[in-house]
Image (cartoon, rainbow, N blue to C red; front, side, top):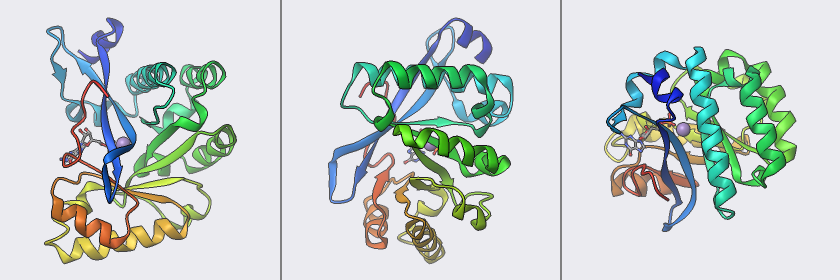
Length: 234
Ligand code: G
Ligand code: MN
């Protein structure tokens, strides 16, 4: 179904706002999430296929489509800043690289593009990620370490990676006001991220109490249903 949808161009982006504590009505930037539609125009639930295809050629196709659509949005909206999800595997994909290179040349995307790579994906091929970041960061592209804390970050690699942002996994955010373990873990992740000069975004914020606690722990930005669900228009 996903292959067919891609072939027939049944894809779109959904945009979720990221805000700063204390200024939650102003959007700092958006995360773009790829949506795949069935023949009736209904959204196929990404959670049910993305994890299975991330390491396959279909995963590369989805990353290409997501980057292509995102660059197009950046071209049409000169004041937009977008964070786009990608797999580290796509770094070695010639088509994906071509879309990025063309985008950087054609459009002023550099300073407005943030590439999000999950911790799990980055740790599979850290040397490749480190080399790629060194290559495109001088052109203005920023990088976010997605799902920070969820998986496999060997902390020693943080010395070699130069991620600009760390996105704290929603697992630590959920009921953080009621769960002291999450407070300690989130605080530790924030301390580590700031030490490595990363800007910290907390993901999956659904309740005001969670936002308040995260603000008191020093997060720089908040994302989650409390501030806006992903939607097809800005
Ligand atoms: O892996 P990544 O962090 O990019 O995943 C983003 C996913 O999280 C999207 O599918 C988005 O719809 C979902 N999401 C965004 N905000 C929230 C939230 O507040 N709660 C939950 N449960 N999911 C969220
Ligand atoms: Mn993400």
